[in-house]
Amino acid sequence: ASVRLLALARLDLVGTRWSFDWAGGYSPPQHLREGSVRGDFAAVEQQVRGCVAFLRSGVARADACGGFMWGAVIPKTTSVDRGNDSWRVIAGPTAALGLQVRTGPGHARLDVGTAFPFREYSFLYLGAGGERKQFYSTDGVLFFVSLGWLGTISS
Image (cartoon, rainbow, N blue to C red; front, side):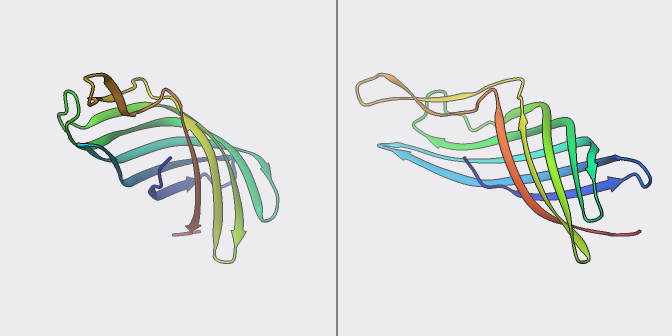
């Protein structure tokens, strides 16, 4: 699990149920330590999505979104097998459900979704007995929950 800082830009097509958004995110480094092994793992990402509202009322809207994400895990490691610190690219399709509620001059928004990266990575190291151990890995399915606020630039 990690926390991410996210910036979101959304284009609502007036008079339709459709919207499109771009999100850019940064996950601050997680620090992992075990014996002489050290690792800091940060991440950057971007998403583009199309969304369709399946429920709209006066102050709320629920929509389903699909799109594509791409980003990278940024490792900085010591004593890790093949421990180069090259960025590991993560990319794949995404799906999410969102709930947006008007709150005065803007909207509060909750997104719950998943991404399916095309590739997984494992960061390995040699333990004290010479055995290979997994230090950190990415998964074939990523889950996310985002809570934010959207303001309006123009009406």
